[in-house]
Image 1 (cartoon, rainbow, N blue to C red):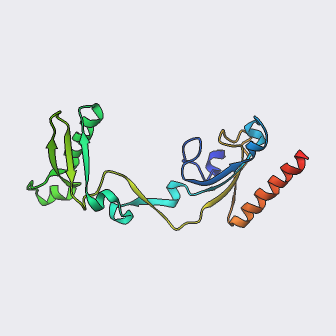
Image 2: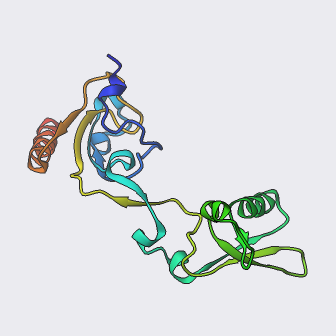
Length: 183
């Protein structure tokens, strides 16, 4: 079996896995230890299992609540944003058929300054362009794994505790054993 399938944190990215609430490794107790000589104790709430997409209203988005501007300059990024806005939205006052209106993200007013930069102004109540997420009421994962941010070179199974007390007890026992070994 692929050891990655046992990893409840699989799919989390970055050297410090995203959405990790707390993590510590025994790496700091020894200088330049290899990853195989370390153990990581981590409390995690992975985005994929502990959050869900949310609308602006659900998260009380400031842009949705008060309106927002998008300034598109003459850079490639600015031109791309202007195309995206024109594709997803319609000018305020435009007459739309019910079918088209159902697909429209929002309505805007457009102003162009002296340099040619376009400013799209969206009124309050218009969904913004940010992907919002809200947390689900799920308990965090209390994980113990060999290795550190560099990986688990021995490919030992990851242990997940159901209760935080057991995770705390294991981490305390592990640190106590390290302190006894250091003398």
